[in-house]
Amino acid sequence: MINTLVFVLCLVTSGASPVVYGIENIFKEDLELEQQLKIINKPSIKTIHTKHGDIVDCIDINKQPAFDHHLLKNHKLQKKPNFQRRIKETSVKKLSDRSIFGLDKQQRCPKGTVPILRTTKKDFIREKNLLNSSIFVQNIPGVHLAEVAVSPKFGPYFSVGGDNSVYNPYVTKGQMSLSHIWVQNGPINSANKISFGWHVSPELYGDHDTHMYTSWTSDNYHRTGCFNIRCPGFVQTHRGSYIGSRETNISFYGGPIFGFYSSITQDPLTKNWWIGSLDYNIGYFPAKLFSNLGSANKVGLGGRTLTLSGYRSPPMGSGHFPDRNFFHASFYKLIFIQNVSRENYIPEKYQIEKYIDKPKCFGLSYYGNLRGNYGGALQFGGPGGNCGN
Ligand SMILES: *[C@@H]1O[C@H](CO)[C@@H](O)[C@H](O)[C@H]1NC(C)=O
Ligand SMILES: *[C@@H]1O[C@H](CO)[C@@H](O)[C@H](O)[C@H]1NC(C)=O
Ligand SMILES: *[C@@H]1O[C@H](CO)[C@@H](O)[C@H](O)[C@H]1NC(C)=O
Image (cartoon, rainbow, N blue to C red; front, side, top):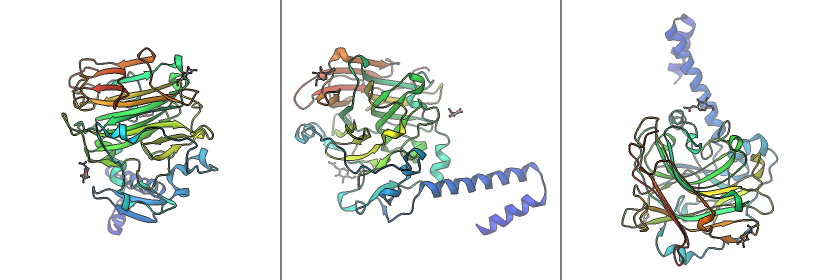
């Protein structure tokens, strides 16, 4: 390292050829990267190497990356939400096994600390090739979607959730395939949105695995809108289930099916937006981050894919079209939303708006209330391929 440094310095001082300037710039970028990494990777109280090869740092809960955000300087940490979950685990278990995103029970971070996936220099360099967060913006070439939204006519909304089958669609470099629930508010050009689910993104993780992710924006992804902890904002509270974690219990066509129960719920008192699973919360987005998310005028569920403009689209979900068989296409079941009454209910078919831009590539069916182990349910996804822009 020292040798390289001296060598570069010599070159820089010894002449002003274009080559030398090139090296100087690389050197400067490298320093900037190191500085950024220092800010993101907080001092670790304990470091865990997961069996999947991830490095997870247990960080003092009060010193986590979220609190670097200027709007969160005097934020009062909320440890638990002021609401209760009301889904019966038995009904969730019937069709699918549970997917667990995060650390094993015996491996969790010590009290007072939270797990944060470590960011490496390689991550930073790879991520630059990711097409921003444009996967969430409508009408971008290469972005396709199959989603339902509950109409603003019947809002506002304060919660959305459902039991989602976890798959591992094959994507190549520069592509992404995701499955998510979301809440949104505001006019389209300054939309505030939170998205939570799983995705496959080689640029973000350097692998082709399925990862739990979240993303938020307060200006329709113009200046805000990173994934996971890349921009400060998300406050992690759980000691085991962490953002960016990898899932290895993957569903297959015909079974077995692994489900991940996900929800986004606004805290009735603090107005923070909590993300969670069946019987635990992972953390929250503080209300302060948003310019206009006092409630959601729309909530939704479904999938999206991203490819370079002009390239074939990756598959979405299981890669199969909806056919009412929950062992075939990917699904959300036991769907619920909440309006001002703050009671869970299943949206009626007439309350649903469908967004599907390439029906040849991806399908979407909302079934309403199928009752029993399914409850409110939908299927989405398809093989992708040559969908056109
Ligand atoms: C990413 O976002 C910035 C700022 O909005 C924009 O200037 C740039 O063109 C975007 N890059 C890509 C690859 O879309
Ligand atoms: C889930 O994956 C883990 C390995 O990550 C494995 O040990 C476990 O048996 C799997 N669970 C099921 C139900 O297949
Ligand atoms: C809210 O949802 C409940 C069902 O839980 C429904 O009875 C009520 O009419 C809804 N309220 C509004 C304002 O839409």
